[in-house]
Length: 297
Image 1: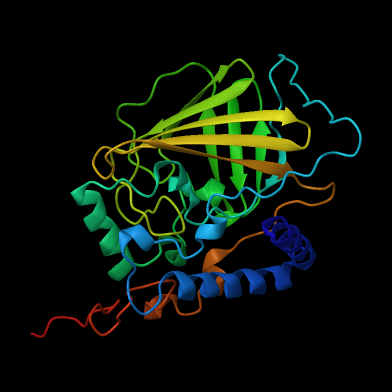
Image 2: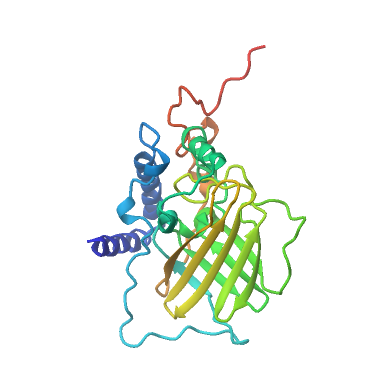
């Protein structure tokens, strides 16, 4: 049944993406639909944070190629070429599937409750998704690669991430950022990206409001098993907010010839930005006003 749902969803997404205007409308409506379902009138307990448990972590069916699978291309220096336009399904709640739910520390549980009740979805403020969120939100991206650097061009928020492959160490003085300070290296045919130095404010690790601290450490493993698929395995460690690390994975598919990224001007459609009523927002606006009145003199 899930395979049928995934195939139908894939067809629908391909159809609406053929019209940028229609695609933008559908994305907005879908976001509000998800928000309404995920954050209903009462905040769910941490054990029940995922209302789509039957779909959690699904990467969608990987359709076998017609005839023999095409080998993954390689760059002139012999490395797998990860370049291309890639798409994959949304992971909603599924990143904790392997550990039976988020292994919160007390501080992590408090941060999660805060996100559910008092914060605004950072994407609704047009802030960058960061990682791992940017790669699991179901929005296409492009990879551009050379021997010294790999670049991820995200349709989501129309932003990018650039990772050096020249053997350098982490920049100890790097300013905390949404995407962190990432460095890459090859482990055989697998690209390993190690990232630290993340912001701890206005940033979620997924679309479910799960938090992360400035101590988060993310290790990604990217590989291309054949020409049409891109495998992605992620391990997240955050000792301030989680008692143990966890790993999740998914598979992206190469977009058909002619399909590319659409311009994503987030602020253009945030018509109520200055009113402070964007995105998920607090569950009880009377108790947690987004724009509290100025103090009386």
